[in-house]
Amino acid sequence: MTPVPRQTDPPQGDSASAPEPRSAPRSSPRWPLALVTGASSGIGAAFARRLAAAGSDLVIVARRGDRLEALAEELGAAHGVQVETLVADLSDPAQLAGVEARLREGERPVDLLVNNAGAGGHGPYSTLAIDDVEAMVRLNLLAPARLTAAALPVMVARGRGGIVNVSSISGEQPIPFVATYAATKAFLTSLSESLHEELRGSGVAVTAVLPGFTRSEFHDRADMGRSIPRPLWMTCEAVVDAALAAVGRGQAVCVPGFGYRLLVGLSRHAPRGVVRRVAGMVGRRT
Ligand SMILES: NC(=O)c1ccc[n+]([C@@H]2O[C@H](COP(=O)([O-])OP(=O)(O)OC[C@H]3O[C@@H](n4cnc5c(N)ncnc54)[C@H](OP(=O)(O)O)[C@@H]3O)[C@@H](O)[C@H]2O)c1
Image 1 (spheres, rainbow, N blue to C red):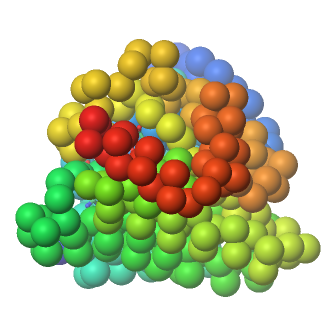
Image 2 (cartoon, rainbow, N blue to C red):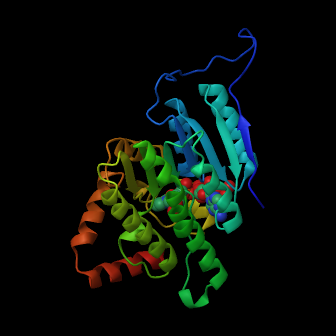
Image 3 (tube, rainbow, N blue to C red):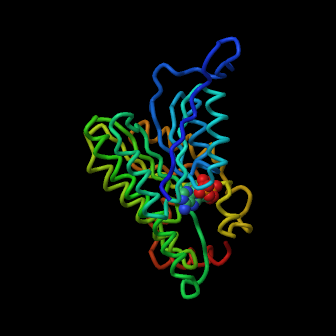
């Protein structure tokens, strides 16, 4: 199915009946138009809320159209921004192509692309349905790779733009029982870092964001995370604030939270065999 764009305009008409925008930094938002994938919940919805509050118009993408419509109405009313919704399953090549086409549009170019949609899953690799593995690779790896490829020519031609790829600390090491997810995120971080260097001096920033455990719908959907101690959890807002600050200053990699920065630093310097064993223990627990 081809995704159908729908425009949610800011309130029109008689100023007496039009709701007042509650925050109004509409003059010159850092990112005039941002496209956020996976905006129907969790980190993506938090990106949409933060960007709208800063005055950005939005294109929001996910499968659950009802959630997108509700968010579009909420943000249009609260901030006076324009929010376009695109309903698309990004693991489906035809639906993904609709979002790529939107990014190639030169008429209303996207200033910031947030590749956030993603899903997890776990289990011994030998027992997994290969179609589920492929769907995860399509969503977590191919979709951001293709959307980035669609967005970049327009951004490079304009000499400005930003791309945030929501990767994960899971991509920093192999994780037994979460093998596909960890591999897709390793790809995404590596792709982002390479592009960051390729685009140096172009005016386009590519930033990989590597969250740790973050409260969202992610772990319920993947049936994971119940044994994770409470202090390890971050909020979506904290992740998004760190990510937007990082892409704003052209940072290549952003690990939100001091504890997770320490963890990533340790895992990069520890012997690979030790890291694998520890990751295996964590993989079994989560
Ligand atoms: N939560 C964590 O602890 C954590 C840690 C590290 C990294 N991350 C990454 O953060 C990103 C956001 O996850 P989250 O924590 O916010 O989880 P979430 O609440 O489950 O949100 C995932 C978003 O992705 C969308 N999505 C899932 N499958 C899709 C598909 N096939 N096509 C289009 N959209 C799809 C979902 O919308 P629909 O279901 O409506 O399509 C939803 O909006 C993911 O890339 C995840 O890997 C999360």
